[in-house]
Image 1 (cartoon, helix red, strand yellow):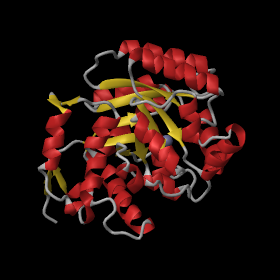
Image 2 (cartoon, helix red, strand yellow):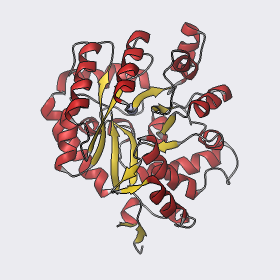
Image 3 (cartoon, protein in one colour):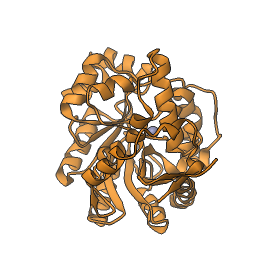
Length: 336
Ligand SMILES: [Zn+2]
């Protein structure tokens, strides 16, 4: 196929880059089994700063090959992620994973928060590295720690990224425990605002969608990981119709195998047509918007390569239908 010129930055709004080291570790199992029996034990055993650096480096090379220019990461030893990104001249939003239990890089959540603050200071105004605050989820982080983390994010005016409403189990458990949906719970404790990035959002009520839109929070949709872990399909068409900025993520290579946001965009468009029995839902152009402009907006890039977001928005609008989404792979694109 003839190469297709493409002059917008592809943005991977959610990944755990160094999970490239766990690619293929466990397939065809449920999320709780996948996490409890495979991923968390492997992380405990294998993760150290060197592992993170090596596999993030590998993941970045793969992302670059697939045209990705910016990625948002949530993992451990986030400083190593920053080092690997700088070495590869890749823009990154790093996030030191905050969990209530000990992680490979922090004895407790307070230490993870301290590490986050050190990173915020170290990379202040860095040309390639932005720092986010990254509590893992509502089922691994207590209410008090979720709030402490948001306070830190607000203090430094940075992105707050959290997995949210990924599985039916998370949704049902939250309702049983708190009498609220995961989104309702996050809103009740004051965590939803324009600098909150909700990752997944598969299990939402119509009220949740309205709430996310009202608070101007952003969503990172990870269709391949949601499909493979049997989590479901996020109501992306409804979210976009409500005016929510939905960006796209690959998630880690252990759950979605390939770090290819173009592929995620194609899945995102096809899925919405299929589940809504409506081929007009999520056009090729909307899918490209998700993987480019919405990525910039979701991660807080008001400026990219010296140009304001309006410049990139205009360039996107001038790009026509983007119907080549359906025929091209990222390898068929010529990035300029
Ligand atoms: Zn994730």
